[in-house]
Length: 295
Ligand SMILES: [Zn+2]
Image (cartoon, rainbow, N blue to C red; front, side):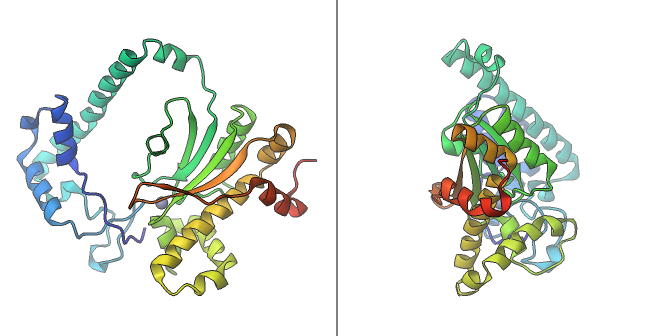
């Protein structure tokens, strides 16, 4: 994706130090080139990365499948296998520590988890690695049913997201459906760039269509960053409308007065969620002339 964002400076080195503090991974086992790579990374803080994975267009000569911030780029080939083993094992170390911690806090935690789920929320978010739904919303295990894709799109021909909505509404009886976008979204940025992006074209078309729907408003915004942020918000709004267009949501709302749909946008700069204050009832009424599926 086209990216103008600077990735956070969290890297293997700093994560490793955090693990080491908790005695999970001994730092003495870190390959020397990882330290070198870390130093390089710190010196390269001006390099840009993409939001959701993909190519970087800021420097055409570096357009590649590799992320320009990929720590292994500066590693000796012989150390890469060690690095991969460490980054794999680290997850299991964390997992054991997490499971232990949960049991310590609540001995019945896993018994309750095994009994089934009844989440109040369905979260439809971007695949971007910097937006962990549960952490930013304070929700825990069992609280939220999560679906993520590039640029948090709700496309009626996408069997995946449609199945998730159907299951969440008809079987889990969620009370809220949240479409959560984020400022600085690589997918939205890519869609703003009139360029052939191969397999991504049909996916990004959905955002380009949002731009076309709001072309007058967006073109009137001179500042490109502001226009980009506004498109993020308008796209979230449009995805909320797409959720409300589904039969599952319309029929459940007519019968139960839920779920209600919300549009939120996450900001990297302050970590806060902005509520776009979608009026579910009003939006539902406005689409039902054409999309009414309650009969
Ligand atoms: Zn994104």
